[in-house]
Length: 319
Image (cartoon, rainbow, N blue to C red; front, side):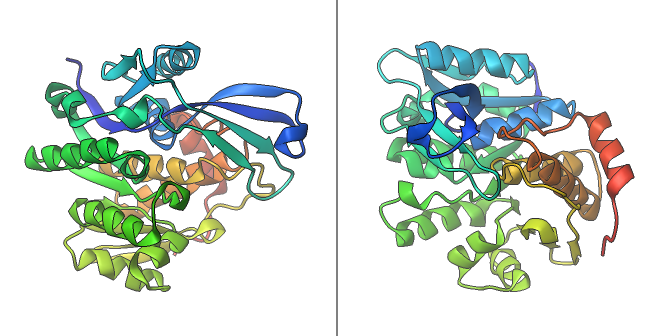
């Protein structure tokens, strides 16, 4: 089996993006695209020239076939994407906004991806990867998907692979905030790199200060914590080092969805390629800034050459 640098897994959905502003019930025309935090990361890594793989289930339907073809076109390995003849592929509707966050409505309950089970786990596929990237979404969509996620984490750690984890909180998918915090932190404590947003960090730890949030996870054995600070950039901390890396200036924010996944792409790719933590975080900030300047979830993700030029041309004020 062809080796990949990073493997990830989760739920992908067909997304219908409104072609004009307004409430979703008023929109008459949409553009079809792909949505999914983990597929965003896989696509972003592939565009940078890294080998990326995505594991999941999709329905044996038009939406599922669209997702498979879209990922193939992005050079993402899909050898562990299973076709489900019983359950459908989820989809979502996304509004167009002139500023701020778009309205998103999901149609995902009972999807094929939510029926992913430990029995679906392919050991050969995962051990072919050097690194595992996880988000908190599979932990939330069903008990069986949560079991798959925990099994993947334990398996990859047992085999000496590094694991990055983006909490990617989805409170509406959980029965309670208490359950969400417990389950997300259980996975975070076992991960090597934890990448929360500042608001997520406060929910998960009870602390507001980035340093305190980071220390909360470092004290549990996490190697590196990087906290996204929005336009202000990001804060990182290890047992021996810490720092703040300022964000890149953005004249107009078009759509914020996918910025956090793009940030993960930058950090993961940087660390895999031997960059310093600061250099990796600069990459993350750069891709996040590019992401918010385009309408799709991953439209703004750059190639390696585009990323290098963007950083060179716009980098300023790094602490």
